[in-house]
Image (cartoon, rainbow over all chains, first blue to last red; front, side, top):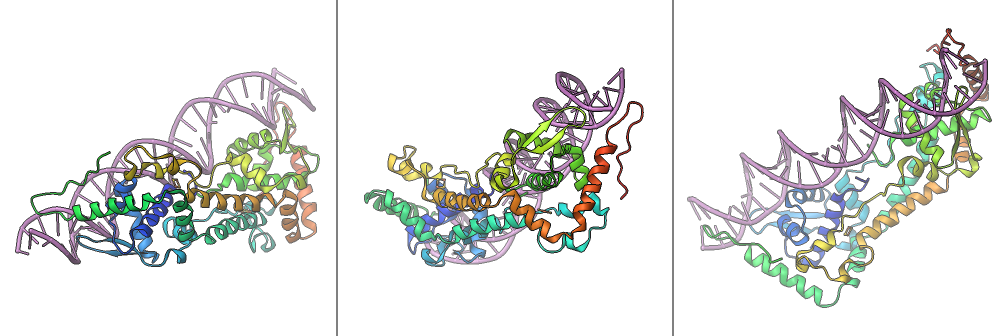
Amino acid sequence: MAHLTVSVEYGVHSLLWLTYAGDKALSSRDLADLQGISHSYLAKIFPKLEKAGIVRASEGVRGGYMLSRAPEEVSALQIVDAIEGRKPLFDCQDIRGRCAIFGGAPPTWATNGVCAVHAVMLRAEKAMRDALAGQSLADIGRALGDKAPPEFAAETQTWLDTRLSARVGRPGAPSEREVPT
Amino acid sequence: MAHLTVSVEYGVHSLLWLTYAGDKALSSRDLADLQGISHSYLAKIFPKLEKAGIVRASEGVRGGYMLSRAPEEVSALQIVDAIEGRKPLFDCQDIRGRCAIFGGAPPTWATNGVCAVHAVMLRAEKAMRDALAGQSLADIGRALGDKAPPEFAAETQTWLDTRLSARVGRPGAPSEREVPT
DNA sequence: CATAACGCGGACTGATATTATCCGCGTTAT
DNA sequence: ATAACGCGGATAATATCAGTCCGCGTTATG
Ligand code: FES
Ligand code: FES
């Protein structure tokens, strides 16, 4: 269990698939099945991305999610903050005020401003956030796409099209959405 | 509960007190009482610092800890790694290999090397670690010392001397180590 | 208009990490 | 001999994480 949890891994990878989907809305179930991850859990992540304005939701049958901004305009930091909720790298418990020398009444010079130890951690956090802010979803997608052979894009489109056309669901005849493993 | 836990706060602050103590060995109980934190818990942190070569321990009565290196030679990163055990900022679960398009048998191009998403997190982690590596214990101590008035150094020495001379402990006459609050 | 596939949110559970306490062991200055 | 040390293991309380389950309102389809 690290600072950046699997929710971020799920979220970023899902957003990358959305860049592939173009203007087609993909449901959270589509994305979960496509990636072999838990649908219930992924379904808890997307509302956060929607509130952050990264993704737009359409409700009802054939609903789903689409990117609401161009991949170039979405930074890794925005995704992380949307999912993790801007949680601090270090949370200071204000040890310094409990020093026995002060005897329960720490002088103002000891407690005003940010503790020097805390400041070090804040600088480290800022460095991390700056690094994340400097990478866009488009950058990541490009790096990922460079590894895949040309025919992979077509295979992806086929999978998505099959999925989207099969998922309509006629009453009394539930569509089988199983994809052969 | 953040990535850098209170153990780090306890550890760094304790090491700062050790820089004040000079060549006197301070016990973990001294350091805990001085800072108003849990002795039992601090006692679990110091062995880690000792294994990392940051402090030296002396056993037996009047034992305790001393810095084993000059404060200039101890970086914040070394302290964090010693205490947290080099835990990663992000731990990749290799989502990419579970893609349904691959059907359980992901091709090598998909799984070799580091995932582009993972790479972004690794860059962020490196930025954080570089920031920590650039700050020494001496730097932090200087920033902290600049805030304190000149007479504070003397008060600290007095507190430490009183503590060290009072803690000897003659059989049958347990020393009272209570410091008036 | 009934149905099923959607998104949304809350309640709930199991696993793991953190924080903290307590105990017993070997060491060592008095 | 005693008491103050460091060291390590066992234990417990709490919090977060990962994941599931259910019910609600919405909406395209037949
Ligand atoms: S008081 Fe929290 S880091 Fe110094
Ligand atoms: S597979 Fe883990 S980050 Fe991409």
